[in-house]
Length: 263
Length: 266
Image (tube, rainbow over all chains, first blue to last red):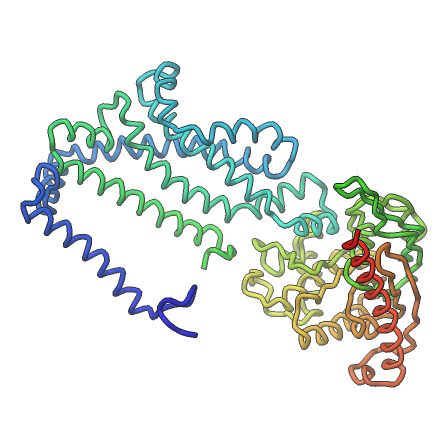
């Protein structure tokens, strides 16, 4: 059975490209039409031209780079701290039921709390400097990473461990030489996905007494009704997310050519 | 002397409802040094559990396993195993996979490479040393798994339906390859399968198991000479043996089916 709508069947490559190009073009022209039609005031929906000009302005005075640098620092710092802790803890949690029993109940509780609910506490505990912003990103990613990585370790095939025992490996060797490498492709995927999530917490993080950063720029632009700058901020965040995603895909292929996911 | 003795091995486990089920009952037999012994039975008869007990991956409820007359407990490199599922380490090349056990023992790199080369050649994969498992077919992966187990020089080779996931053609070729490699390596083998033809083609002795609780129902000598060839599959001796084992297995399968029906009626 063939057809464009039969489940999971591939469609011609040309059709795929056409459809995705048309979708993007349609969205863009919808924006152009709506912004130029006068139906919506440009204070609320700027034209692409205005957004481009705003971007050029922000680049010229160098402030856009400052904002990008500040945001990248916060996101990467929070993400790195979360990953450094979540990877070993997650592996232990997915490997030893005893560790799971210790960590899981707490994690499952915290995981469902909205990060925004923690912000007031963080301000009280950590203060209003960059540490709080980093902490927001950390909380937003760490607990998700922990559960995802534990699940990856949990699903390492039992036979892979058993065959290692029959080749003469002891428990410690089974963990370090078999279990850990077996989790690497999954961990790489988890990092890629959660780095995307880390970016989504940026604006929330920069709500808190920031004086630089893309989220801060978006917030202050709102006060002056500089919608064009808000658009610049949103587009840049999206772009940075896209770039980091591609970077991780590339890293995956480069570091783990053996991984079935490396294509 | 790699004489493998199973002495009244018994395995019981408790179900969630709290009943005690006997999966294996008093399994006793001895595989002689360099013998190819095969366990054959219906699915669920516990034949794979026997291998896990011998490998030391599971502790028996009762009984013991002896290797060369000495009792063994826990897993060890003296009992190598090949699984039905693909168990190559995906992050290691074929050669590194084969060297895995040797590395653990701290064998120098040069010697390791020599041993690996020998066994990779034996299973017909020369030229694939530096390839990752994801590039290999199922049959090739199982050949590497056999090479990996043999390179580690175990006293006994345990094989748990190693060709179970392969198509029929590949399967029979793998059987012949295994016999060639086994002839060279001179190992004691304990092989588990539900495929009667495979069991008779490979084994010196075939142990037919009963359905749950698993017991050894009958021990059958296979009087076919070595080396075995494919045309023996149609010889009178082979066909007669096959008919006999099929009859036994069929009885057990029916008994199992009746028992299930009884369970369902409760």
